[in-house]
Length: 128
Image 1 (cartoon, rainbow, N blue to C red):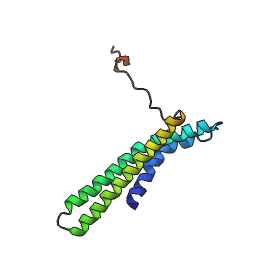
Image 2: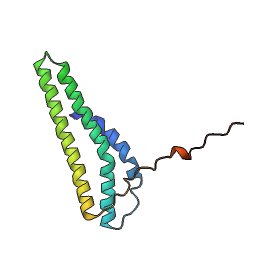
Image 3: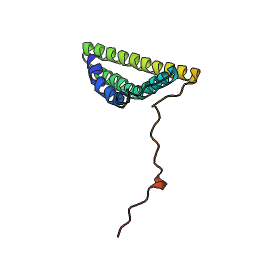
Image 4: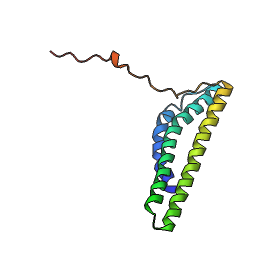
């Protein structure tokens, strides 16, 4: 589990770097602060879910590949259980934050995805 946490810190920091860059912007109301917190959580949860799924699959691979060794099977089973618990906690936090967001009518600040490019709007370069 320690290896998993050490490996996930750079990934999470890369997600939050833009948020830290705009940290000097003052927010005047509690609603804006809660909205930016919701946006931060909404950005952080997908990478966390991916990492917890990889952690679970790593434990599953250890469990399957250690069919002859009982000690390694127990280790793989433990990793799988920890992965399921981490996945459940991450989904629960995401759900609770969005439940509070929707209940209070807050708007997520900074959680919008960039607009998609319509292929019809792309013009091919002119050849001379």
